[in-house]
Image (cartoon, rainbow, N blue to C red; front, side, top):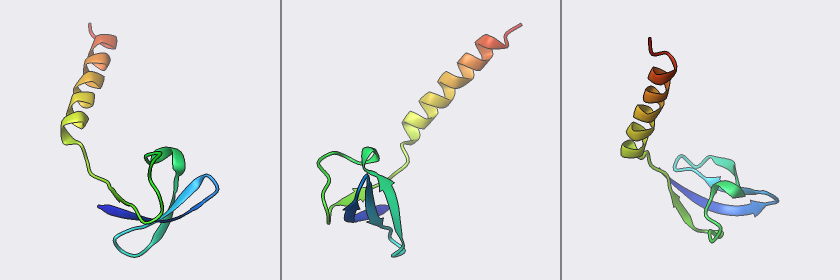
Length: 66
């Protein structure tokens, strides 16, 4: 999914989604060098997601191990 930065308002970037809706994203959630007109590419990192899922599962197993 790609977002276009339309403008900045205070602590938010107003971005246009692919469906032409506008949403506010905190400036802290986007790269510091981003500017009006830039395209943000948002995607799921499946590899990192799986690593974190396994890590959390291990933590839970350690806590509730018999």
